[in-house]
Amino acid sequence: MRILILPLSLLIVLAGCLPTRHPLGINDEDWQVMSLEQRLEAQEKQAELEHADRVRKAEQKAAPEAEATRQPLQPLQAETRRAPAAPVRYGERLQCVLSQAKVRIADKWRPVESTVLDVSRGQVTEFTLAEPAGQKGRLPLNGFARFDGQILTICPSADENRREGCTRVLGTFEDFRRGIDQSIEAAGFLRSKLHCHLGPGTGMPAQLVSARPVEK
Image 1 (cartoon, one colour):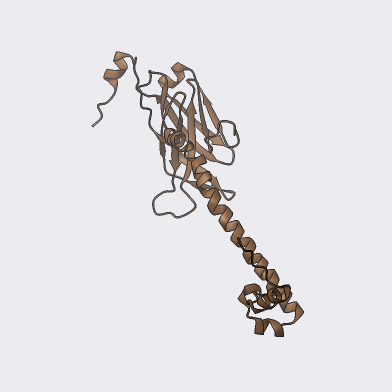
Image 2 (cartoon, helix red, strand yellow):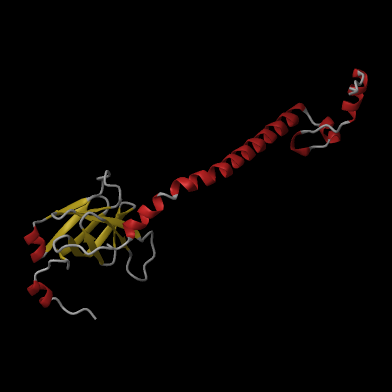
């Protein structure tokens, strides 16, 4: 095998023949007439462009990984919004109406339309607070309701560990069976009149079933 060894002088000549790359693609003729300050500015801009390009490539590389991380959460989020699939027992479901409601936005209480809640024990129910028709603003907002059999909790967040802006309504089985009417206020989130009663479920007394109006 023969190894070609070029003289150092020839390498220097060849290197001198190669085109010189200047920042921002500036040609050699223009580069030679630029002041030192202009050259430094061009080099700084070139460095900024190269940094932005590296950041963009890193974000593109990280995007599929972030999407893969979010995907396992999607079934849980969908479950939050889905109506209960299995029938619930009588006493484990509340049906409520929020009326004369207002929400807090930008330090002002803004009226919203009446809203119906259908909450089953052990589940999180998402509901929407929308402005009356014809009004335009920052709404709609979402709220979240939970029921554990004795306590109805209404919050601006689905996170059970966050208590800010939540309100609770307490009652016994008999209280909810007869129906509860009261005013509620969740600090910085919601003011409303609330009416709640037990919703239908398995084991519901026959006299209550026969007394319920037929749905059309």
